[in-house]
Image (cartoon, rainbow, N blue to C red; front, side, top):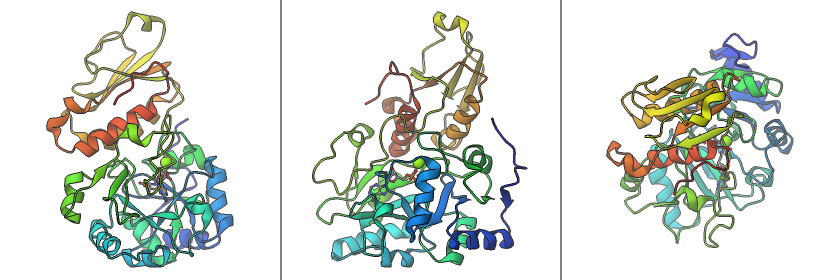
Length: 360
Ligand code: TXA
Ligand code: MG
């Protein structure tokens, strides 16, 4: 299933290929876009036909809105309405973190298509911190809609070949931007409601401490369980409709287990892969193989390797995957509680067995 970097649709990122990709976008075509978080499936965001191609390629429900990517913060102004001084101040503060792994949700302007926002009155915007993405966005100077470049509900892509693995037929090319630095999707933060605190809708690598120091005010973290409420609180600016369970799952049955749990005898007839979050690989018996995401237990390294590892684990070699759950209280000392929550959240979404223990 895994292809290799020599796929004909993987283009080395040169000024010429970036120009070609820019032309393809202007022509309404889809391309694979490297960002620092995950690869995006990009199309111009100002034309319904090109936006429709994204939803078709991903088999994404039209109820799940897209992020518009732009080359710098000033390009956001035509896309949003900031008629409150509080919102303008928050936007100025938050945009100091751009380019970066932060998506801001704001009231949308008339310029933004309903198909981008899934009919909602807010829009998600981001300036990604990847040199190739920035060059391309600045060259096309159009808002570029880009969800993660995976078929809906599959694992997000962190390498160019992950994009061609699932979506080769839908894209013109994917620009080779190497392995994504972060490896986990951006933090989605709503500043749409001036009467509510800035609110994290999807956890990512940014810590609340960092955000609070930038805003100079408290930031609300919707916990992953809150985000999964079928009915969002009525005062929520917008729920993140993409945040349902089973959102990032491999095809192979995947179960979350306690870090201390050993192979169960029931595994005997199955080729079970155990993925540990930390510690040495191959340190448990009774498994077909044991991998470790981070020998030293560094959450940034775990985040960085998670999706790639899930894709490798899903190559067909194993009948079942068991992966350690990340209990927040066991990881408190490692620092960034938001990143821990982000990883824990993605692990729960990746688990696709009904008996998977559910975290808080
Ligand atoms: O890191 C990322 O954000 C990557 C790269 C490519 O930029 N993109 C990404 O896009 O993860 P996607 O479509 O896979 O996830 C976007 C998330 C979804 O959970 C979606 O529901 C939420 O952002 N979202 C988009 N527009 C929204 C809005 N107006 N209000 C609330 N949530 C929104
Ligand atoms: Mg996605």
